[in-house]
Amino acid sequence: MLHSFLSQIKDHRRGQGKRYQLDHILLFAILAILSGATSYRKVQRFIVNRYEELDEVFNLQWKRMPAYTTIRDIIQATSGEEIEKSFREYSATLAAATKTTTQQFIGCDGKVLRGSFDHFVDVNAIQILSAFVTDGQLILAHVEVSEKTNEIPVAQQLMEKLGLSGYIFTLDALHCQKNARSS
Image (cartoon, rainbow, N blue to C red; front, side):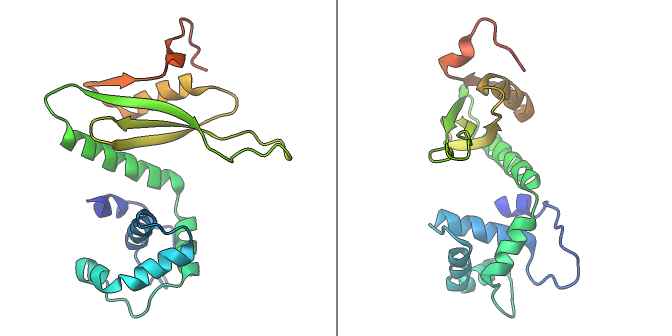
C-alpha cells in the first residue's frame, strides 16, 4: 500500500535515460533502512541481495542493478515536501483503517535531536515535534520547530494541517499556558 502513495510523487528527472522508477527506488530505500542500512552503499547492497524477491513482487526486470551513486542521485533529487506529503496521506489512511469505535488518542511530543548542535559554529540544537497515534503505534508527522519559536504554535499548526477529527490530542504541560502565543 505504501508503494501506491510513493508512486504519486512527481519524478523530476527528465524522461531520457530513466532506468529505474522513482517509487521503486524510494520503497527499496525505505525497506533497506528498516533492515538496518545506514548508507547509500548499504541500500544498494540490500537491493542487490534481495533482487530476486523484489523482481518477483514488482516485476522489475532490470538489466542491471543501480549503482549506489544512482540511488543517491535519485533520492537527493526528490522533493522532501512531496515525500512528507505522501507519508502523511499514507499515515492518515492507516490511522483511519485502525480507528475503532473507542476513543483514540494522538500524542504530540517535542524532542531535541541529540548531537545536532555545534557550539563551535554557533548552531543550536534541532527540535522536532512528532504526532503519533498512541494505540496504533503509528507516526503521523514530524515537524521541525524553528529556532525563533517554541513547540506551542507548531503543535497548533500541525493539528490543523493533519485535519483529523474524533481524536483526543495529548500534549505536554508546556501547552497548558493560559496566554499561549500562536506566533
